[in-house]
Length: 446
Image (cartoon, one colour):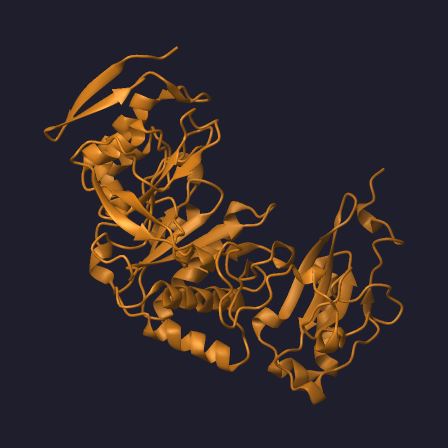
């Protein structure tokens, strides 16, 4: 069993690493000492992401293959040179959290079992006003990396259009992160409100690729997780090693790298050399702090159009204007919520499948292929050009539906932007494929 200790002189500070030979990544053989040395090699970049901020200690005491635990409170037994700051949480509790300022502090955190770094989006000097807007792109199961990159580029354009500079990085896991430096003038509620507006705008521009829907049963493509901007939420920071079998790293990129980047090439072995050769692509981030006002104005427009606040994480108090914290499929269908479009003629289920939505949804096509379904949509548009003119990109819901061993396509339209007295009724489907009785068609297996 690994044992013993090793003392390191890091910038004149002695850091003792216990069990330095303990294997943290069984697949690659990397040890705790390897992890310490990695963070020392990229310390300037890692501190740009996590330094000067309160950090939650996510401790993998049994290495990357074990279950971690989150420790908000700094250990009582710690060196005098470890800085802390007192944070308050939505629960009303408080905790002294670690604030790393130098490479020695990073090594000390790794010795506790911290594989990745999890800072709050605030500086220790101002705990109430975030200076980062964090865009967390979280793909649903089955979404491939090229689609995630596409959504990242859409997010970049939205940020630019609203006066913010996006700084991209791989998450080191399945997703992608984009940070934007903001002026520390707004509290967490306003920053999250801006993030909700941003997520919805990304969804509007790429409705087939991205979603801002909180409930998993309503998501498709890449979920833009606005709630990562709520108070007490943290994200693995730049240059964090992640607890994956290949010890991937959450790596800052330049935008020209994004369209072709492969997250698998950024690991504990490759990133130090990249950092030494190229420097930190995020080195100029601190000079780009900008105003949230344009995004907050977009949020106000959405609210005026009738969009309620998006759901908060379950452990937060109910917020003013927040919709019910009940899965849509489990809500009682009473009053206005029951007055929704019925199934298409001849169909046993409505445009939402086994449940009925509170949104005015109609179904326009079911087809064995997406091209056939889109042809059904074109026929509907020809019959209802005026209603089509009211629709926004996010109102066209193209769903890839899973059969026993195949997929088929359903198209629904959300008529929320069409005046109620001008909404076309649910009609018989022009393209009317029944996956339950027609089988797999040309894709039938022998």
